Every structure is written in structure tokens, then in C-alpha cells.
Image (cartoon, rainbow, N blue to C red; front, side, top):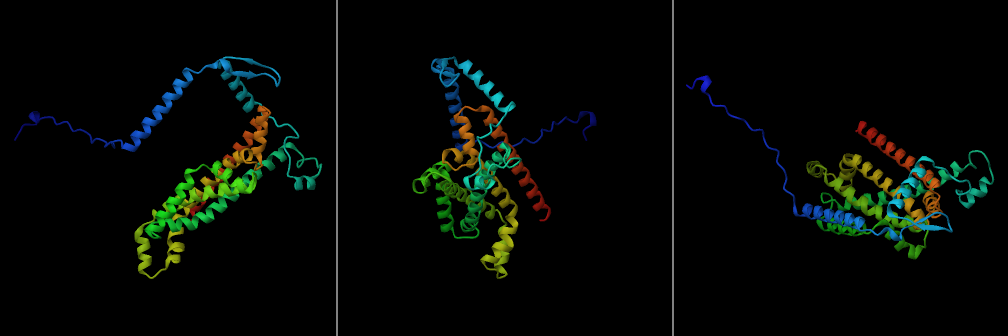
Length: 313
């Protein structure tokens, strides 16, 4: 037996953390991003600022350097977010509501009430398109799930919605505007069309995450397709459905702001566009804070709703 003082010291090496080797797709993505960053840096380094003009008034302008233009932009941003102000008369109700309210003073006639009305119009546009998209996508998502439908039907639906998602929402709105004209109708159809494709993919993937043993057990007990959906699929994936739907609601709200200017859908987006057109940076900051407040309220409501649902599961 080896004496204790002569036992060799064995150094135990901790287990190494396995590192996944980068795939071809991730390598290509990283190279593309690095190339774009390099192009941006080179473009800024060799940018000629001699033609940059800083607008002083509507009638006068003077040539400035790029550094002066950047400084003026930062000062404008500071003014926008530190001294927001809405000019009276730039916000208004729709014609029927304006005739109903008339020249009422007080809260209804204030600038804040008229601005909040524009936010509510944009919020309603986002809610309506999300509701339409969620109803249609629920049926398509069930039909596109590989564990609830055939392989052929799943591939056809997923391929179709992938094509729709590849086209930006703004382009869909402009495409439908050819037939419906610029306005809220084209915005609703285009945003709903893209929402259906987005939520169909999200819902179908949530349904496919359900344990296959549960579905097989219900089939073995004689349950039909509708019983499987309403007794196993929907209750098990309700949390995911709520999360994806609220996420799309937030996306549609921000899209509705842009559509107010790009497609003439009205709402607070049109007011933001007009404020930018007339270089009213204080009013732009005022509208931005209103939009930010609504976005924060939506996030709080979504978090509480998901928490309440998890408590009742």
C-alpha cells in the first residue's frame, strides 16, 4: 500500500461546457451584418457634407458642415422631448362628432381631448385588425398544425402565409389601396391580411408544441376532432395565444400610426405627419409622448392579463 505522503496528486479538471459550432446559416448572417456595418462606417467616413443645408426659416437657408447639422439635430431632439407642446387647432374630431360636440368648451373642447381622440382612433384601428386577424388565424392555425391536420394541408397553408409575411404591411396596404383607395378601408384590409399570416404561423407552432400523447389518448377514447381541439389543444395553448395576440396588437398599433400618414387612415399618425411636415418639433414631442403612454399601458395590461390567466390555470 502506498504511504499517504507518496500518493500522487491528481488534478481534477472541471467539465467543459460544450460550445455549439456555428452553422453555415449563422456564419452567413454574421458575415452579412459585418459587411453592412463596414459599409455604414465607410459611408459616414467619406460622406461629403458640403451640400448639407440647414433650414433656418422658410425663406432662408445656409450651408453648414455635417457636424453642425448633427448638432442641430441633437438640439431639435432635446427641444422635442424636453419642451413638448400642442398647438390649439391642430387636432380635431371627425366631422359628425365635431358637429355633435360643436364649440363645447371644458374638457371636450380642449386640445388634450382632441389629441386623445386621435390616439383612440389609431388604437381602434389596431384592435380591429388584430381581432380580424386572430379569428381567421385561429382556424388557419388549427388547419396548419401537423399534429391536427394532414401534411399536405399544413405545407400549403404555411407556404401561403410565408409569402404574405415576406411582403411588408405597408406594401399590402398600398396594393389594396388600388381597389379601395387610400384611407382607413385599405389600411384595415392590408393590416388584417398581414396579421392573419403572422398569427397563423404563431398559433400553429403553439399547437404543435402540445404533447402528442394527450392527443393520442383522446383519439383512443373516441374523441372527435372538435373535442380534441376544445378539450386539449386550446386550453393547453391559451397562454401562448394570448401572448402572441397581444404582441401583434402592439405591432398593429405602431403600424396604424404609420398608416395614418402613409395611407391617409387618420388618427394620431396623421397629426404626427403634419407636425413633421411643418417642422413643429414641439408638437411632435407631444404626440410621441402620447403614443409612448399608450404603448406602456398596453404592455402593463398584457402582463396583468397573462399573469391572471396563469393563476387560474
